[in-house]
Image (cartoon, rainbow, N blue to C red):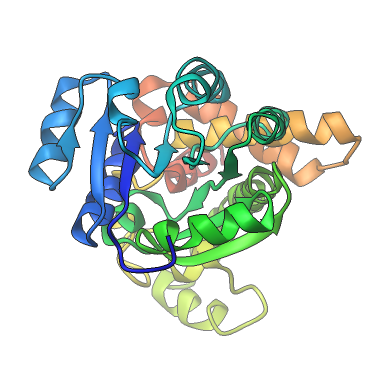
Length: 300
């Protein structure tokens, strides 16, 4: 798949992230055979240049690669074990772009290898906007041969495709990265609220901190205060973006991973507690994760 883009790709899971990813594949010349349980998602995928299919097994017909983008490890494991392993042609490349637990990713990678499949776990960073724009970052775990086969496909959907290591390494990188993101967003929100209460203009504080030692992505690319820095979900009423419920899901994965290897993560644990409380409200769970600034301000 390193030559001209002519491959047929089965794409299973057309949610907010998957739809944009599948659309970018189609726009870049791949024949995308798409499946989702939601009829509306299939209609949107068809409008974006994909071919809607009646089921996951049907999407595999003639495909050289299969991509899953599903909510959790249980769904990924079910689709891989019940459909991909049983119905995909032996030479099909298997790619999971979902965010799931490391243990499941490693198990599926081992099972795929035992059945003769090339397979990678390739979770993403960037959110809905990057999925639509084709500027995601892919963190890829799996054998070198599988990574090299996957890279042209992933590159059609992202700006960076990085081989993290063996099976499960992509999920390990995503878990650690999103724990860091959550903690840095909480700290960024605290800093801006403190600066305001001390009488500083938020934009002026941004101009100072963004070129000082406190600079971080949560500040300079995704500021949680509206009207400060580049446009962010805060400027759109905290419409995601990356929903608080999804950040909580990733933090739970991080806490489970930390317990499994005896890692001490006090800042990650505190971030998880804050997002647990914030996302307990269904209305807030749907907001962008940067809206955590509201809960921090209210608590003060």
